[in-house]
Image (cartoon, rainbow, N blue to C red; front, side, top):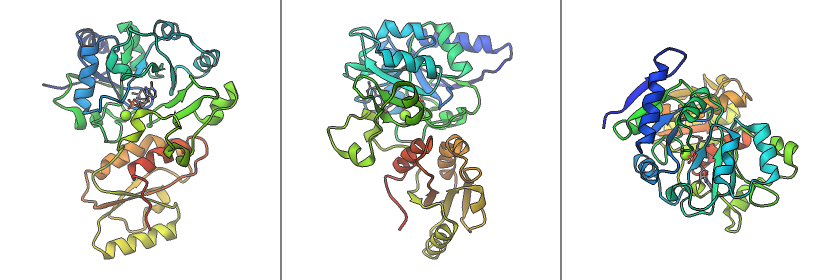
Length: 343
Ligand code: TXA
Ligand code: MG
């Protein structure tokens, strides 16, 4: 299959690109598009044939449910049995934006593969002009996971989607680099207090300001079986080809690690703040200024992917505090590293 990439900006050709995307979606095909978090790979959420193509293109396990994207808050009622009061407050405050709400689905409306056998569904309204234009022209819900091959870092640029899915999907709407760079917060609002299944751009603190207590399970709690989790969080994630090791964000520690690893003949890629540039790593990918977590989240997946274009045999990634959006960044870094720290 030929994969076409179409730029969508404010030029006059954009209308044609949207029409092409809408036609493909209506015909049960998949289309990749940008959101404010990462690129998504969408299909009409009521079309099981289309949704199955998402799983095929990504190589995604079929027990991992998809997020349903909508263009207006009113549409939620079409798919949700009973919208909790708290959910309405959160939609009012954070939509459009990087917050996915897990609620009880009305049976028999969404394609069965969207919910992967669960009685609940995650919904969100993305805060990106291209995504919203597409949804509002289509006037249908779009099921969309991140547009990467399963296991790889999520795509934050159309080029990343091409790297992973060229030849497997018909169309990529190219809206440039996404802003936030890591996926939405997933909040299970079917339980009380609500539980964060995946940390993201909307933090625990931000949620609590609107609805009161919210649980963010610790790593230990996540390991205990009784704690609810997003099915997808159990799979390998965000993994470049070379092994990733987490390391404290301290120049002495990193410098010593680089010397030791170099002596062993390793080729080292370093992901760290700008000020770590001259510590002798073979390849250096700066997160931005030390402590700039917004920059770090927007660059993280691009940096992890860039390591695959080098001869690095090992990747060292410095960590950040788990305050605010740092919780989401550390969640992704820990998964990319498979929990491994440099010792
Ligand atoms: O920012 C995002 O959320 C992006 C963009 C494209 O919107 N999408 C995204 O989708 O990250 P995906 O499929 O890569 O991740 C969705 C996560 C998975 O971990 C999945 O298991 C979980 O949300 N999830 C989806 N529906 C769920 C449900 N009903 N109950 C529990 N977890 C659910
Ligand atoms: Mg994903």
